[in-house]
Each structure stands twice: as C-alpha cells, then as structure tokens.
Image: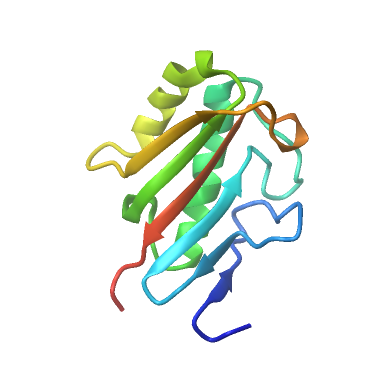
Length: 131
C-alpha cells in the first residue's frame, strides 16, 4: 500500500463485509467506510428500530475514529442513509446525543435498501488531530 494512505482497523467495530476496509487514514484525514448496525464480535445485525441501529452505527464509527487516534468530535462530515425518511426524527435524537456541541456537516439520504436488511447506515470524514 502506498505510504501516503494507511488502512485502519478497529476491534470495537465489525469487520468489513466486502472488499473494503473500515477506514483509510491520510496525513490529516480519516475516511470512514459506511457502518451498518452489526455487532462487532458476532457480525449479526442488531437493533430493530432506526434509532437503535443508528446508535450502534455511531458506536462503530467512534471505535474506528479511536483506532486512528481521533474521536467522533473530530468529524467534519457525516452521511446518514435511511431506508425510510419517517425515521429521520428518531435518528436525529440519537445522533444529537453523540454530537452534543459543534456537530459536523451532515447529509441525510433516503435509499431503497442497505446491506443485510439494515435500515440505517452512517459514514464519516474525520479531521485527524495534529501529532
């Protein structure tokens, strides 16, 4: 792999379910792959509501950030994918609990479907703290 980018793997997040890595780190940025609500140890989908699944997605993103030396508070942009925009409000409530002050830029998109029957997926772009 070129030395200007490095794959990041976090034990507290589920393993990738396809040909991708949990995140790629560059000198100053972390590009996190989308996270669906998979249990980090079993790989099974958890949560029956969009709010529960969003919480698990954010916990996984937090673990990926930590593995790269950052936190979710360092996120500059998050994308939320929802299979039903009727879940927007409940997901916002959970999301707000992870970003109580100075939240990142965000996009919320309705999608026709997500892997493994998930109803929520989140990804993030994170600014890495200076070394």
